[in-house]
Image (tube, rainbow, N blue to C red):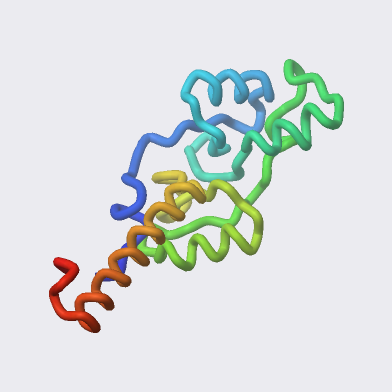
Length: 148
């Protein structure tokens, strides 16, 4: 059976988010407290407008010498990010992330973010699928000698 991003890789959750008007310091503290590497940026209706990641904090804030207490998320976020749909395949998602050098992507239904998937989540899933395929192939080629 083909795996899907939701529910096979990640589950729908109340995604950690900030607004474009929040400061980078607010975002950094939220990331620290929740032990996460990416936050979704939403508007007043909780529609996805962007994503801000650890990488954004390093490259667009710290390395540029900006003040985290006054720099707005709008100034460092990735607006209108690429997204995944819940029924996208992990293989396609991993390929997109590798090609575009993403580590995190929002999973959306309509304009609402229902989860964030990481390259690590996808790698583990694809690895499991490949291992399962190898076991099935071995069972076919060598019989049931490997317990598949």
